[in-house]
Image 1 (cartoon, rainbow, N blue to C red):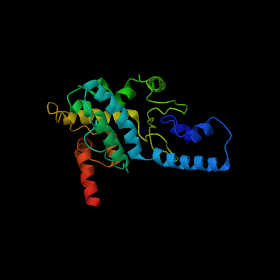
Image 2: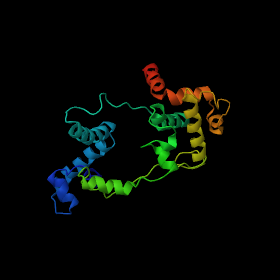
Image 3: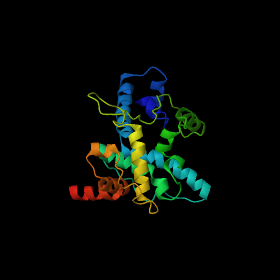
Image 4: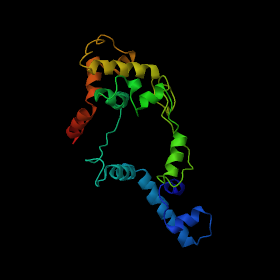
Length: 226
């Protein structure tokens, strides 16, 4: 835990000495344990994650634009994805953002999306980490890097760390959704229902509502729950 935290922050001298293997008294070790517990809570906190994400981006953007202030106007929103349908609709919503914004004609020609990376892998995560270290965005990074979660193909009677669907099905689902939300092509493949929708128990209209209005629908659900 201390090593992970020290990838981002130097930490107090006691922690630095502990990580260096220097001798410490019992009361110093007790203080180090308290620091570790504090860092464990912070590393599990979405608020701390957004704070650490926002700060360097805002600093770089402000330097480029010659201004000051926050990079994003509003606070982050958190929504639990408790079902497979919610997970996939959120993924499709994000992956189709460049298409909806008119920045790309197709998902495979979009930039900075996970679906393009899955279709044409080119992002070197280890190299990106090394570049961040060179830029002093990271002090160091000596923990394993984690690439995109793989698609596992189907449900299995075991713990599944990946996404329990086939990549081919997801690509078909995103392509179907992208065509259906394009006014010039609306209805072109409306009668084509990807097999994955049947397994999720959704109609094409239900899926389109979820994947194109994800934020609005889940905001409404939160209000209803409250």
